[in-house]
Image (cartoon, rainbow, N blue to C red; front, side, top):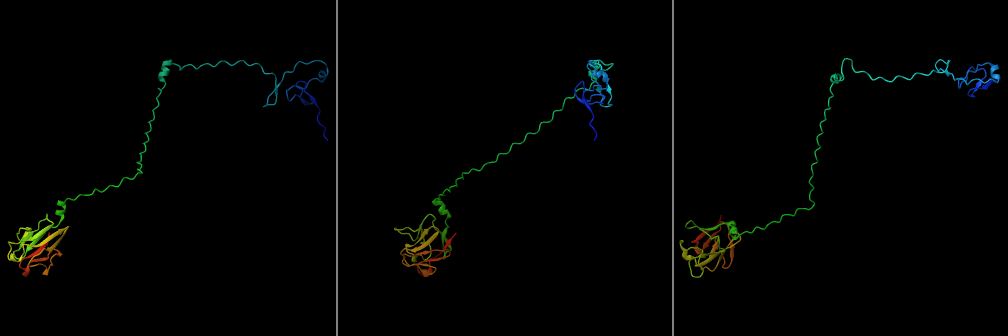
Length: 246
C-alpha cells in the first residue's frame, strides 16, 4: 500500500497542506522557508499574501497602488463652427404627422318592435239605402200595346198600379180608354203589384176576365209576370199587352 503524504498546517491561515508543498493553496503563503528558522523562536513578520495568476499559474508580489483615473472630459464642439452654426447645421426637427382619426362606427338602426296588442278589426258601417236608390235599382217595367204598337210605362213610384178606365172609386194609373175595343175592359179591371223586383198581376173583379198567355186568371189570384208574358184584358184578345222589363 502507498502511504498517505505527510501534511501540516499553513502558518498563515491554518489550512491543511502537504509538507513538500511550496505555497499554501488557500492564502498563497510561501512554505519553502529555512527549516531551522521555522524551528527557532524568532517571529517572522506577517506574510504578505501573494496573488497567483489564474492564467499562468505564477505568483506575483503585492499589487502597487494605482493612480485614480482622470475625470472624463466633455467633447469640444465641432472645429470651425460656433454653437449657433452647429445648431443651424443640424437638420431641423420634423413634427410627427398626426394620424387620421378613424371614422366613427355607424350606430345600429333601431328595429321596430311589433306591437303585441292586435289592432281592432274595422267595423263595417251599414250602408243605408234610401228608397230612391232602391227604386233606381229596380228594373223598369212597361206594357206594350199589341194592336197599336204603343208602349205604356208603369209608374216607378207606385207599389200598386191600377189598370182600367176612369171612374169615381179607383182612378186608373194605366188608362186604356183611348185604345180600340176598350169597351171590353172594366172600369176597375186589374192591378199590378210590385214586391221587391217582382211584379204580380191580379184580377180585381172585371166583367170579361183577365188572361195571361191565353189562360184565364181567376179573380183574387196573383200571377207572377215575366218578361214577354202576354196579357189580354177581356175576351176575344182585343185589348192585348206584352209585359216588358228593361
